[in-house]
Length: 253
Image 1: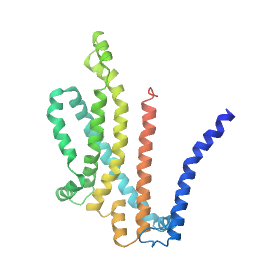
Image 2 (image 1 turned 45 degrees about the horizontal axis):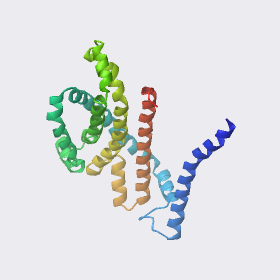
Image 3 (image 1 turned 60 degrees about the horizontal axis):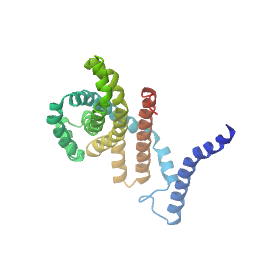
């Protein structure tokens, strides 16, 4: 036990040490080469800006977080029934899948101004953009999961007289759950990006709006602080889904 504790402690300490070394190298490079703060601020300048603008950063973070979570949850609510319908219906797959693929191919940056134009400057246009960004990864992974049930197990359950409902509940859903969570982990990072894109196009609050305003006023340190918060937000949401997956999908390695 004591023999394995040392290597485990070294492994856990390696990551923060590497991150700290990168920050120190960043700080020293900015100071050594005398890079102007409006081009590339040092980590100490970013930390100072974060403390100075902490109330504004917190308020705008909550706005972006709300848009992200609402859009993400609605994307799940929309994609799951459609994924089940497409996976269990070959005709629906043949007809709907190419349409959905074509819609996914449209750049969301190009669609965002139209959605803002149609729905106005309220919060719902931003949520709709988040839904569009999250929808496809969840849908594709869920369809793949529902179709991943082993044929031998399907044949065995049918030979034992299992109904379609029982096959779906006892076999297809457990097999599909890891795929579903994979799609959610991809989608939740896209959700943050979608919220920021919508705030870039038209918004009066949110971290994307704060980045846009701060860069236009050459307050690069504040922009970097907002970007750091967006990164932290994505990591926390990703880890939250990962933790939920470990609790729900507890039969996989």
